[in-house]
Image 1: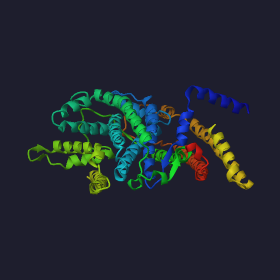
Image 2: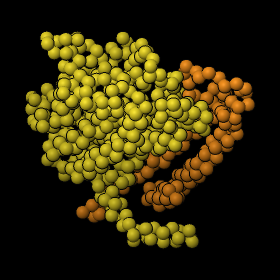
Image 3: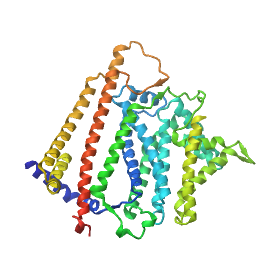
Image 4: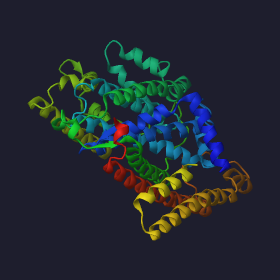
Length: 359
Length: 125
């Protein structure tokens, strides 16, 4: 009884100062549409779960990691062999990044196929596209940090790609590497990007993305638009939140299980003077781009093949960003072609990745 | 606090839904076992890990001269006791997840029922 009373007084004290009942009220009154597209909305919250896990495990790893040429590889080795449970924390960090990017792709393509980006949700799509870019940048910058042979070579290849862009390419590569070649400066630059700049940028865009979702609400299938009153809705709290929590629990269990059984290993410390090992491949989410660059011939007419490939990839990225404006008539023939394009893109990415793995 | 709230909520709602005393008893027994698992599980896991000497101590005890750096470091523990501790932890994690899912499903069923009854219709407006 005394405990209940004191808990109530603490609750009132906080309520008087913070006014949290407004938030709770909002959550109780908020409704989530229930339709055949609802399962796809769980992919968005799954990304948030993996991002939170990344932040927590990333902070834990940062306690021990040292971003210098001499210490980077040794500190990761120490995390894996000496720090209590360090290996599992690193493994969870590695696998949550993988899962997060996988879910970002699933979320992006599901939105593309069900056309949730149509008016007035163009900005929600655009912020989402930036979140994809930041997630990939997280993966790319994080890959160098263990500073082993493979990560150094993959980063060399990766930072060489912008070189092919006319005019600004060389400047961009120099800016990324902190010089002409990959050195200790590149490592500290990537570390700062990975733990400081990218999280800040991602949080900012994420806040805008969430604000837009709250303001414009979840989209409805286009056939149901205009019939909002007749449609099934679910209260956000507790009905929808409990369902989300079930998905989160299962995903968390799967993540920890995978992290326990398949922990990432660590190669020997990178040698800047050594030749690149044979058969370097980037992480799975870059494989299709890597293979695309590989299949282009050295020269196409008078243009450099790599330059053309990089320019085509950049153009595809710009088209993806402005997709809601291109697909402005989603219910007509043009819309159907663009949906077909989504399936073609998935098939292309999968086939190219398999090809890259096999060669 | 959260467990208490779940428990009290389930008790409160059971007045509406559960009429038979058997069902009530089953639910109370379930909540009790849920709380028990959550008290025992972390203690067990912490205890299992606390028994182990750290890998550094082990290396210091067995190693006289520093070994050259290996080509590749595998992360998973090789020691059988450590491995078992990890698998036990994993088993407890999944047990806890299943229990939580069960509680959440009960909560979902109840909130969906209340939503169908439209008990909070006025609040919406």
